[in-house]
Image 1 (cartoon, rainbow, N blue to C red):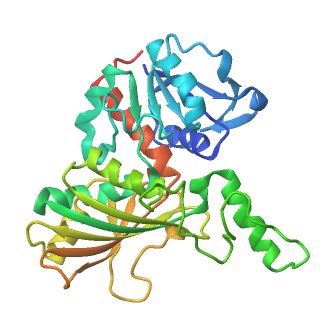
Image 2: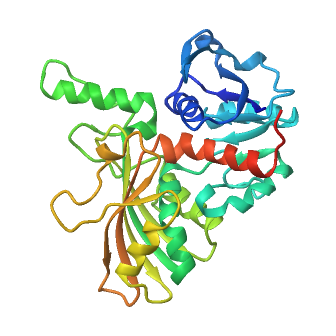
Length: 340
């Protein structure tokens, strides 16, 4: 016995990953439907050893379905998520639409799984921003031990975070560098992304920060602790998949780097690869396709009394999106829903 599951936005990068991960983790599915816009209807998508044909989201009736994993933008989510929720189907939403709604839990299972019970207010659960998800997985066990006061994070975010258009633009621009007659001006990004970095993700806000940076601040407070001060600089880099973060943490109490390393090694969802030698750390290329959040370069910050620096890498299409959504579904099934 299992659940009836809908994947909304099944033809996109994250939707496809959701289907892959549901199959890989053998999520108990009795019936599954891949939903997309009408123009994508009939597109064939893999689900384990099966092939699904996408159906029209606009005409789908969510009555009798248990869980809907949403991987579409906020505009479509605003239309269809309330319909699914009203029909009794629990929505796990990957967009930013509901993340800051007080009546919608924002969940990273390794961090705040107990918040899952709040889903009953709206029948909706929010999935956090990709850069936030991996960071709070790293922060949680350290916060439990020494209480975090302040976090300074700089991100190195891959183009897949901007969707297929971002991936295509990096690919096309990279090829054009070696073919001067094939000019590929920026379309998805504000400047050339090939062989470049862009310190700008999402729109600018009045205080000079970007919305991506604001998301990391607001979501960390909601998921982990409202009293933690967070400042972020979010940067797009010419990497196809995998977000990296340089994180500086200031604690209320002293935490030795060796103890921090031991704590992280024993924590769920984390893989510590931290050797002080050439190659003794993880880069984005190596994290692709993996479930773990990788931590490297753990070291004391001698410029403050209680500081630690670390390097955090994760597959943004997995832990930053699809994997976290499936893990939420697993917690929901284990704690809240009845099978079949």
